[in-house]
Image (cartoon, rainbow, N blue to C red; front, side, top):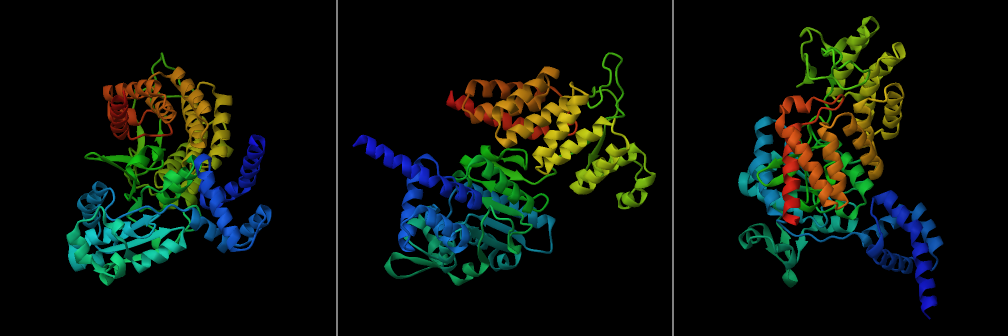
Length: 508
C-alpha cells in the first residue's frame, strides 16, 4: 500500500515538471515544494473545465493557446491585498517623493505605476492619498496605472467593488468619503477616484510593456517578487528599473528589499525606510595618467595607486578635458582621434548610458591597439552593465590571460558569478581580489551579501564589518573611485553595511 502511494506521488511529480518549466518561462512563477499542490489542484480544475484527462494533451493545449495559459495562471496567482498596506511607504511617497518630483517638473504629470496591483487596492490608495493632499488638482498632477497578469483581478479592479476585509488598514472616514455602500456589505470606489486610475493586463516577464508604463517617476513593486525564483526576480527588477525616468524611484515590500540589492539601482535610506533610485549605475574612471611610485610599478589592467590626478566623469562632464570639446562630433572626428581621445569619449558615452556607442568606440580601440588593457576592462564593464554576462566573462578571461594580477577582472568575474547565482564561484573570485588587495571593500561587501543570503551570519557579519572599517577610515570620494571600471557610491554602502549589521545584531 505504501509502495503504491509512493509510486503515485512520484508519477504526479514527474507529470508536473513540464508545467513548472512552462510557467517559469512564461510568467516567472516557481512551483516548488509546498506550491506543487496548488499547481496540481489548478491543473485538475482547468483540465476538467476543458474536458481533458491527459497531462500531455493539456500541456500541448497550453503551448498553443495563450488564453488557456492565462486562465491557468489566474488560478495560480495569489491576490492578498488591502487598502493602505505598509503605510510608511505611502507616507514616504506623499510627503517626500511626490513633492520632490513636483519641484523638479512643471509640465507632464507625475507617473506612478503599481506593478502586480491585484484587485486594485494599492493604486486606488495612492489616488485617495494624493486627492487628500492636492484636491481636484491631483487629476492634473498625477497619472496612476495598475497592472497585473491576471485579467480577472484587473476586471475586478476596474469595477472597484470591495468587501470589508479590504478596509482593515483604512480609516473609516476615508471609506465614507471615497466609497459608496452597495449590497451585501460591499463598497465601491467613487467615480472620481476610479477615473484617476488606469488598469492594464501585463505580464511583467513579457517582452514589451504598454505605453502607460513607460518613464514612470515611481514604481510600486511590493509583495510581488516573493513568488518568483532568484533569476526571475533579477530579470523583472531589471526591466522595471529600465522603465524609470532618471532619478525615478522603485519601492518593494519591506521583506523584499535585500533580495533586490543587486547593483541595478541605488539603495537609498530615508529615515528608517529603504527604497531604490535610478542613478547612473556605473561611472567610469580612467587612470592611465595616474602617477606611479617607484615601489608600485604599473601593471597593464591593474590597480592604480592613489597618487596623482584622477580623471573621472561626473555630472555628464569629463573633468580636466577642454570644455569646448563636444561629444556630438565623435563619429565625424573618430578617424582623427588617437587612442586616448577615443577612450575618453567612450567613458563619457558610457556615463550618458549610450552603451552601444561606447562599445563601438572601445571595439575600434582594441582593433587598433590590442595591447591597451584598459579598453578590455571598460568593455567588460559595459557588457556587465547591460547584462551581457557571457560576453563580459569572456572579456575578463582575456584580461587575466594577459595580466593574471588584474584586480578589476577578478572583481567583475565575482559580480558576474553572483548575478548568475553561482555563489561558490563568486566567493572564489572575491577572495582572489582580496588576495591582491585586502582593502578591496566591494569584495568584502559582496562576499558578506552571499553569506547573508545563505544564512551564514558569522561570515556575513565579518564581511560587513571589514567593508565598513575600510569605508569609514578613508575618503568617501577616493574609496568610491578606487576600482576601475566600477565606481561605487561608497556612502550608500556604509548605510547598507550598518543596516545589515543591525539586523545581524538583532538576530544574535
